[in-house]
Image: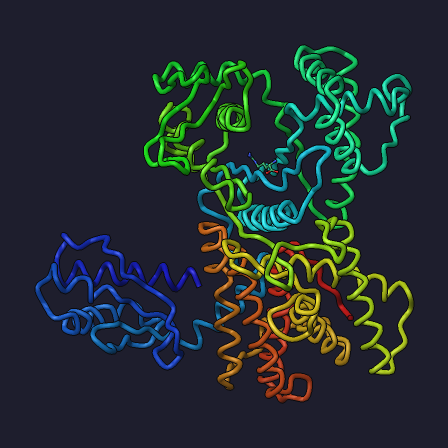
Length: 588
Ligand code: ARG
């Protein structure tokens, strides 16, 4: 209800100025949703903080303001009341809510206005490393980054989804040397490369690197060759990247995630220049041959200052240099106004240092916002790092397969229990959709900063804050429309009187109308779990309403009012779940 919030804020300001003078204009009313409907819908808490400046008791201030606000808000809000030490409570009028519901219904965006200040935004997410495992950390980054990108896109921001893949670095030396030994034909014949599992390939190369001095030397040559643009090394590198890319793409396709790949190597030509730009700002210090920036507050384990190295003593560049070059490019060429990095919390220091260096070196105009979006670990049910039964790190493919297999098993069980027969393609679609949705939702519904326990049983449960529970609420509404042969969209509800007689109807209606506020907050705070909470609450409120209020059997105007609530709930669930990257089903 951004509309109500804006109007209450303006009314508060006018009343404050009229009562206490111009000096108080623009004071934040500290407006918040009440946590108990008994106190109305919103409350303004500013009287408490104004007490000192005004030299009056908060309650007296609140009473004066409530009186002055009442006439300006009378068209949409009951006369405000004062509670406790000086909270001003507002209750929205029923006709206003009905009018807002009608607006929501008529809008294909469910009344959510696009942002008044659309920003060119980069979301840097997923970003696995070539020839290495795309692990659960990358899965989290992919799921969270995609949800953030979807929400910002929906709000009208111009989003560039970048996959900053680790496609450069000294590890390519040993990979190239190993490829030359094991699969030389790949370098000369098109499509001859089939090294199967790249991760095993990586491990083999690594073992040789550690054990065989001659191989190690050749690996070094491989790096030099690659950096020097030697065509054979370059071709080997491209083949390795291509092979990884194909594997990554399979995961992205299953998850329904799109990304533009722009790996670390893209920025190679810009690294030297970036270091010079930092040098020109006077920040660079030479330390044991390396070029570094010392920042206050960063120390190593022994308490010594910990610099950010931007050029190593051998002249080479590193992860941080690449991020600094990427920043410059993203600001200068991509014209980004907001850059969001989605990685595990372990990289928090890296980003703090990179952002500070970039800012102090004048590479970031003050109008550009840089945000690191950190997330916690994925743990096994034992609370330790997630592992397979044999003790390995699980492959993402296997993890998704298992989720789908279990979702299939529980679906088949349910169908058997209900004595239902369904065609194979129905079972396939439902099992896959629910399995993938469960994995994504389990991740998104946690506050991303905390670690979470990966539990198939929990994520696939039909009870609680899970994907199946929300998908099921949606299905329930679709079955109302099937049962009553009703096409919600076509029903001429617009012109019928709407009455929200039951408190459960009212609670549901108010919750629906909060969608725009919630999305706005998420766009600022970048916490998708807020949307999960909102949708979970919505499903609970809908289920309570539906258990008590008959829809198809009701008399008018209750029937139309309830159909309206059903329609809006279904559409809000569908939109919200889509913004989280989940697909809804009509039946399950
Ligand atoms: N490749 C890195 C990793 O696997 C993540 C890259 C994140 N993005 C960035 N611009 N540094 O940890």
